[in-house]
Amino acid sequence: MSVSIVKYYGSQLGKCGYCTGIHCSKSNGMHAYRLDCQDYQNLIDRGWRRCGNYCYKLKNKETCCPCYTIKCDALEFKLTKSNKRILRRMNRFLRDGKRDPVEQVARAGNEDDVTASVDAPASEPQPQMPDKSPAVINVEQAVSLAKAQKSKAKPARAAQVPLTQSPSQGSTKSAAVISNKPCKKAKQMRLERRQAKLGDTAQQSSQKAFTQEKSLTDFLSATSETNKHHLKIVLVDSSDTQHTCAEEVLALYRKYQVIIHNDNPARLTLASMQRFLIKSPLKNEKPDDGPEMGYGSFHQQYWLDEKLIAVGVIDILPGSVSSVYFFYDPDYSFLSLGTYGSLREIDFVQTIAATTPALKYYYMGFYIHSCPKMRYKGKLSASYLLCPETYVWILLTDVIRSKLDKNKYQRLNEDAAARDVNEFLLEHLDEVLLLLDATTCMQYKDYVQITGTDSDRVEIIEYSELVGKVCAHRMLYVNMA
Image (cartoon, rainbow, N blue to C red; front, side, top):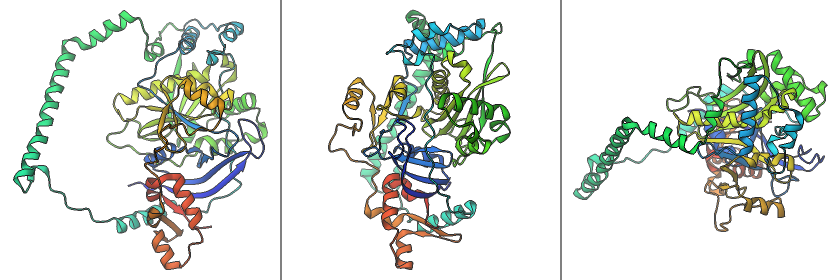
């Protein structure tokens, strides 16, 4: 059992990276000492996002630029004409070593083909960090305390009678009915295997040839030994600082931030890059039913021959691959590397889903409709926005876009009666787990009874409502200075 440990900061007010307003970006923030990968999956499914160890959730009803979490169903993804142009451009460059003239690329950048523009889309700007330092704790000791407390508080499970050992005739009959289902499934599986042996794959190839529709994988696998250039993508664990903090990476990061985001070069130090892109609260895990590389934080490094031209920072989670940041060499903007990187990451999700079916979504961070430069994320097909009130996923359609044109904040879920199924209520407060000091961990109900104080009640409730009931009960809330 992995334990997540967080320190809640409460409301934050700062500069907005989208409209460049000074004191108009409103959010809630917390420092994550450690995050279980499933807990973080639950958090981003409630609108949270991380930047290094800092996690934040926008107050969409109040902030200047509402941010909607956006994801793409990688298995339902379809290439657009714009996507295909970008893929062909890259393949042409790798094959012949020739780049399209700037004018030709720019002409492709019309209203319906934004991603083909020479001005490739930039990653989200870094959020303004709170001017606070989290309490220093011994993480491993806190984990041990939390595990001991959870084991102590865990209620005894009610005894369950197996279906095959029913005590009555009626339940035996019920068990017999249920036991017929696996037989039907086994028969179906045998039939599917037989179809495969009879040439199901050949049939699919025939259909594909008939439609002449090339898949994303087809485009990305169109390589040859005779190519002028060779592109290699290397997956590196973010904790492997020998590679993630290499001189080439820092130089590329600085170049991208200065040219694309107009950052001050003096502030772009190795320490700042580590804080933003290298450090991660995610606990790396390798479950038997997970992907080969496991869950956690990784970098995908794009090497063109021997030159590093792009880096994709990603989190691999139980249900998704979440894009944290993507930076590239502006000298290669003619290849639309921002969009190309997204297509590569979708292909990565598709590859993982082949062996880990539950992991089929690609999270792109935030969709900011009120900021035209950030609308490019909505160009990917099979994209969904997270309703900021009920936390259900809504397909991004022209109807949704039209509503956001009229009002930048929208509930999105049209069902007025729908509620958050993971809603935290006051009746759930007693089970919130608190870390009080280096040696004391207890549930909220015991904390109030022993200390006789509930001065932190409002803040703990606010935090719990934001992370949802499941995470409020699973994560360890640091309640110390």
